[in-house]
Image 1 (tube, rainbow, N blue to C red):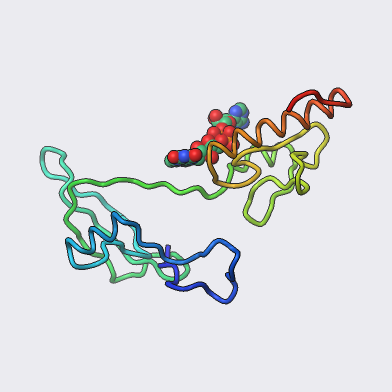
Image 2 (cartoon, rainbow, N blue to C red):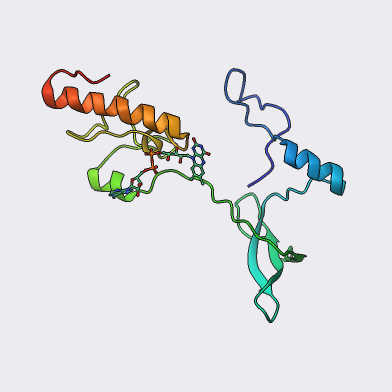
Length: 162
Ligand SMILES: Cc1cc2nc3c(=O)[nH]c(=O)nc-3n(C[C@H](O)[C@H](O)[C@H](O)COP(=O)(O)OP(=O)(O)OC[C@H]3O[C@@H](n4cnc5c(N)ncnc54)[C@H](O)[C@@H]3O)c2cc1C
């Protein structure tokens, strides 16, 4: 992905979550030790290179354009002994929402009315990451409990769950 801006953009005013480049203490330490920010943006790994004993020795990378497609001629080989894959969350898988014919938000989460877990199709409710997008375990627990209350009320006409 491209580097986030250092300051808030015009379309990202307070009190929205600041979508800016953050430098954590670990990165600050790396900058202090190695003299430069170790992060490389808009670049992907295309090949892993190992020695005869199958130990990783290098990676091949290529820069990505603004369309996130490889830019020919920007291939590089970089030494590498340890590769950690950090997989991000791009939204819930589509199979379940598609199977139930659920409407999605612009961030590809299941759409529910504000303050409700009803997914818009009779007898279907949604909670947790599927409803709010990538988040925290505490939110998943809270939403699971609140959704259970709503399901109970739907089934029984009232709820004693709290
Ligand atoms: C790498 C990583 C690190 C994280 N670290 C933290 C952390 O440190 N602290 C923190 O608070 N949160 C962390 N999170 C976020 C946290 O894990 C999620 O917010 C939370 O697990 C969401 O809970 P959920 O019940 O909504 O969804 P999930 O935990 O994703 O549960 C959904 C379940 O549905 C099942 N499922 C999917 N499709 C079907 C189907 N068709 N039929 C039946 N079952 C199905 C899945 O197998 C899964 O068990 C992390 C997430 C990731 C990916």
